[in-house]
Length: 378
Ligand code: COS
Image 1 (cartoon, rainbow, N blue to C red):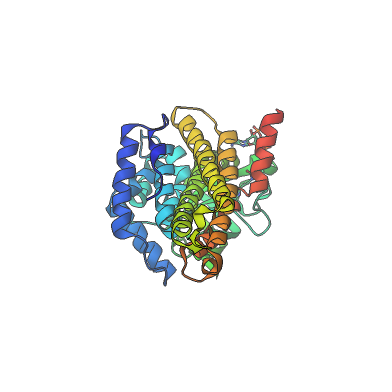
Image 2: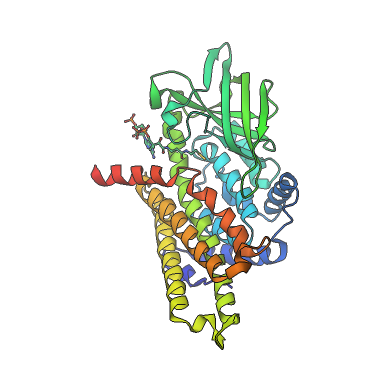
């Protein structure tokens, strides 16, 4: 069992400890799931997490606020048990993040479905020529009678192919660069929208390239104000970047647990591996990185929940440190497993693949460094 003493830190309230205990119990009975058919596994996870009530935390209904500490606790716990379960939960939150923060009452009707696990959502920002550089978005939304017509391509869209709806960012042209983008709610069955390619990655999850060929969206699909899509995207990422750090933290905790079991049971020269000082050094570094990551993740979440208008710097620090540290912790855990560590099916082998994308998506590590440096230099 992973160390859960952090729940006594002052960042948390009783409801967080109760949520964590309830989810821990649910995970023990439901995870991991079979990943053989990854689309089916994700659909099943969304339905199950919805039925159990945990997806309620992925979005905020009218008059509610997202509780970032709950988002982080849920991601951390799910990621410790099954990275795909974390993915399924996280995408319901990120996909509908713009609606949670800025949606109209009509748009929030979709939230009721995603929070119940009856619809799957996706966040469509990245394009073939703009991943880190969002201001360079090329997909266009042209003003037409009664709405907008969208043309372009989006790629590396998580849940692409299985989503029921996408929040999509397009250039509406109020000004060049970052000041000319807008966000729209786009149902997956919109005529002109197609899945151009399914993309396979080292830790499988539903991922696709989308093509938009004159997709018509009514005025009511616009989220927030026209021209403010860039700031809207950044505000969503500010909330969800700490949760990526939380998922990384969950994976790192699992890796430490696996490593501890290994070094206590595996014997070398007549004693457990854990008796060797050099092994103890690795264990100490792993535990230290995990606590430092947890402090940064829950500091960012707590600051947002306490009403900070922007947590850009805290969110970037949490994501950067927690994902990089988790990669190091998992690598050390794999090393301590020797040959067994690279064997297919060994938990640290899948963690080694699962963690990698977290250093890239929702702002690669070097983007986080840019964000932090700008804030420090300001
Ligand atoms: N919240 C609210 N507003 C923000 C903001 C935030 N976190 N960050 C920037 N803005 C505002 C700025 O204040 C600025 O407003 P004004 O035009 O009124 O001055 C505007 O948005 C443009 O900001 P900036 O000049 O910083 O834009 P850049 O193009 O230089 O941004 C980075 C560069 C790298 C920070 C940005 O593009 C980014 O975060 N990229 C990574 C995106 C990402 O995560 N991609 C992965 C896809 S999702 S899986």
